[in-house]
Image (cartoon, rainbow, N blue to C red):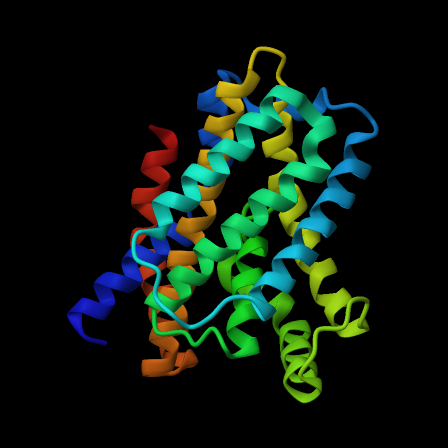
Length: 270
């Protein structure tokens, strides 16, 4: 790898191995997000499941049908502004707004993620790229630390690999996106199970009584910024894989990750 690509790999690892949405939300609301989550009503899990599924279905339709392979300069900030506005509405209305607000925020985010993919050389006309954009939503929903011998990022990709391949083959073969097609349902279900962890954190923060519209906007800003970071890391890795091959990139990823581990631990202790 060139020095420039190694630098890019290091930056990607920092983004992918340090998901910090919970910490950012805790800073916004002034207390650990886990404690807030415990106070959510019993109906919250059903609301999260329904809203997450609806959001990902809408995002998949956008990713496969309406995005074109044309650059849109300066769109990252616009997407953050739009998502922040949607969060302000969600913050003022609370948990009940999730089935409406989350799909809107997720569609805004998928467009931002697609811009990042394009900037790393991806072709948005390729179904595999569209599915990789949706895959971003599954790359930060970890429950506990990753196994020491298996990177959390690559573990998540491995879990989704078969369903991504099958869904991409189905779309390429049929040329259509059939709602309810088993291969697409399986893919979205896998993504939703991990995305739902992060959505629960977001909704928990937005349901704090004192959060209101301003806090809801801050939560959504942190939400989209988090996934933009994950997308930057994810598509940087995919670009390097196209240049050097998956095995080479994985080996370098693991080496650099171990090299950076002491710094990450020091940051956590600090």
